[in-house]
Length: 223
Image (cartoon, rainbow, N blue to C red; front, side, top):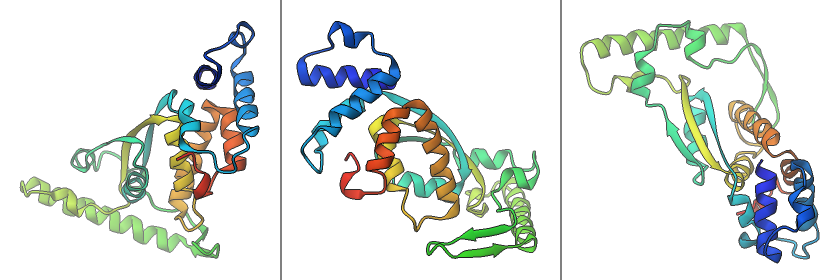
């Protein structure tokens, strides 16, 4: 119950705790009360200290995406704790599934670039990438069977990798904000939307308020 936890922390900092009526508030009502509180603030740019109640609830997500997108996500999200599956472990399982299940390759379609122009990705493009991924698996196996060091360096950046990411609500909102820029790749946008969907389910009222008022505004990102 993240919103109830935040509300209790907020009321403790404001007036020393909850009164009897507030103790009986449901999760959604706590979320609405939090929004009312911050909506009444006269400051245009709320300071860091005002959002410390958002530090209390924490959650972990298991994420699977291509290595390139995960690496970018980790680089840009210093407030989240990431437990990334080593590539050497990923390599051990190569060949147990279809190449399509082990590597990210876009399906045919028109994909937007950083300028919002859509570019065609054909079946031929997809087949070429699948062939390149399959070839990389063969080279990796040969090098690995010979006991050569760092065979995983042969693996392409579109190999699928898992990570367990943990953080409090403020750090998750910060992650979504930092990685919601329009110039991001289609893969990053898709991953961020999937994370946003889960954060929204976890803390719906707060997420809706934050998304409408703060998302993608670097000066107001709950930092």
